[in-house]
Image 1 (cartoon, helix red, strand yellow):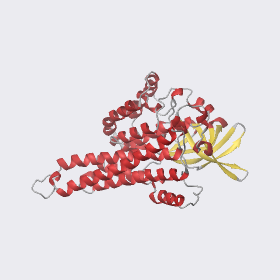
Image 2 (cartoon, one colour):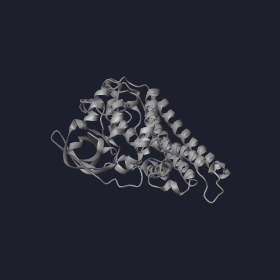
Image 3 (cartoon, helix red, strand yellow):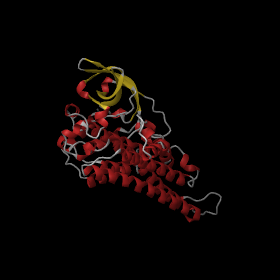
Image 4 (cartoon, one colour):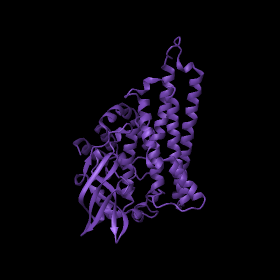
Amino acid sequence: MNSLENKADLGAAGHQRMTHDEAVAWAKGMIPALAGRATEAEHLRELPQATIDEVAASGAFRLLVPSDLGGWGLGLRSITEMARVMAHGCVSSAWTISFLMLHNWFVARGPKVLQDDLFATRPYVMMPCPLAPTGTAVPVRGGYKMTGRWQWATGVQHADWVMVNTLVDRDGEPESRFCVAPISDVEVDDVWQTSGMRGTGSNDIVADQVFVPEHRTMTAADFRGDDPPGASVRSDAFVRYPLTPVLVLVAAAPALGGAEAAVDLFREHMRERLLPYSAGERQAAQPASQVRLAEALATVRAARLVWQDAIDDVCDIYDAGRQLNRRERSRYRLAAAHTVRLSLQTVNIVLEGSGASVFFEDAPLGRIQRDLVTIKGHVVYDWDRAAQLVGKLEIGEEPGPTDML
């Protein structure tokens, strides 16, 4: 961690907790800086340090940290809206910042001893968390020896901890267990050579016989369950929210915000662009382009309504002390997939009417399209699998062992 971030932490410690409205206003204020650094983030294949320093200085990484631990104690409505707004500046930056915020909620779901350990020196952590169990953990005295490779470690360049999913052999039966280790105990393999979402720096984490003490682990059943260990020691209702619905709705937010930004860019592009091989006619005067703009507006509006409706439902249900059943969980996963699907459709609508100049590497509209195509490839936004799961549960079939609910 550099000296600037240390200074930022000192400042954050004295910051007054932000309300939801203040946090969203802060996110809106970040748009110009994120837009100005979008090309740099793409070329670096990680967020510029200036962006990390600004977020740290604001205290915003504490967004989802429980209030009794010095955090802001905000929840799903706040992080989703902030991620959507920040994506108007840079989709990769919004994704990375929101995931680094979200993973503090992961810690808050864990047992008190884990929270006390990770939040001991600072009221937030910087921690990627690949969810696929692509490593192993062997029980040893006092803990586990962890070995494996985990992909998609968003923001790992800025991390002080990593949280990964492992499989433990329990008398021939696999147990999924999350393990947390200092970044210094693992290696980061620079593999993130992608066409889209380059600024997320989602490289691989590699561990070889890394010792993880027992208190820095928890079973996936506890972590993913409706009654996580942290719920018994924290008063914030958000600690009890369901893992997969929260994850998919948060991750859909940058796609939606990027689509909204694409429509705004197209509107300005129409006003300024002179059509080639015309008598100096502006694109804005062309009826076909006006119809295209309207179609894009309608499509992105539909995406936002689907997304916001799902968020409001989840919040209302859990704030009332109830829980989602499996059919409801599948529907909200489908809502998130539909949001991303419509968002990409929106971008493609405007891209088809924007001419060849938007395909230059540093053109914002082309970058948004590359980013959304990449987001659409995320496993939770696989439309066929998400839709099949809903259909399966609607006719009374049981979900499979790998179905994400």
